[in-house]
Amino acid sequence: MAFLNHTELLVSLRAGQLLKLDMITGKSSKVHNLPGIHHAGQGGLLDVAVPPGYKAGDWIYFTYSKPQGDRGATTLARARLQDDKLVQWHDLLVTVSATDTGRHFGSRIAFDGAGHLFFSVGDRGHRPNGQDLMTHAGSILRLNLDGSVPQDNPFVNRKDALPEIWSYGHRNPQGMAFDAAHNRLWSIEHGPRGGDEINLILPGRNYGWPVISYGMEYWGPVKVGESTAKAGMEQPVKVYIPSIAPGSLMLYSGKSFPEWKHNLFAGALKLTHINRVALNSEGQAIAEERLLADLGKRVRALLESPEGWIVFSTDDGGIYQIKPK
Image (cartoon, rainbow, N blue to C red):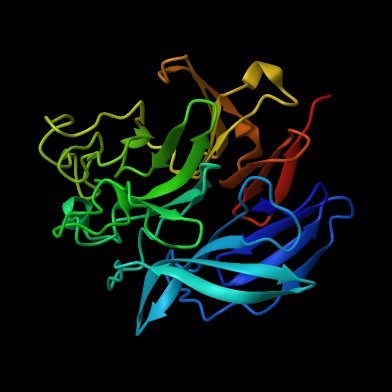
């Protein structure tokens, strides 16, 4: 989801539709001129996001699964909104990530407010991708807003790595948030049967998948990988055992709920709640609260409104707002 202004919200649907929702009336209308989208398995139209300071007519950014024969590749694109249609659609990066599985496309977008964006690509159901720097799968990527590669990316001068990669060793990051106040990027990703992770993302770092993991194999009580830690591989800030199945991540400003300032909020799919994580000044997770579990809804996306309200969507098609009393 992405706010266009105080009252209009763009909502992407995985099946390949984009809606514009009036937050006052609750009425929605279709946005036209989307490209062909590979809607299969977990693939489809993925994230929609606007950069800080967005105003009408500016670029809107998308990630989606682009058809590659009978496969799909996570792709970053941008377009402008003109009335009820998208114009000037342009694919900025068709990632090297297509596999014959329908799993682990990612993908979320985050902006640093300094002319760059990040977006995530899952390992596409092929575990070795996490440690392979010649594929975008299993990585978080960093680009300039026009799709070009920043020259200070960590692997930009290496022949054995793709220059867009910012970090690697990821399984399936489906939530990202940039903390402009501390100049740091947060990510949350799915682990295998336990071992979901919140990570502080640093350039060029290896986050371990599938060599290290806190999760278990789906087929039996067997640990994934070699161990939970290894030299040269980063440790998560927080691990969830059992898995909550995170679908999103938001860093909250504190505008309407001051006591939650700079907390991380994640949507939980499997355990059906909103997960609030308090951080200390060093970026360590010091407390957790599970909100709205009684709704029993798979929380897919989280967003802060211009007023500082918390907006979230659920997999059964609901959009909710949390406001102060």
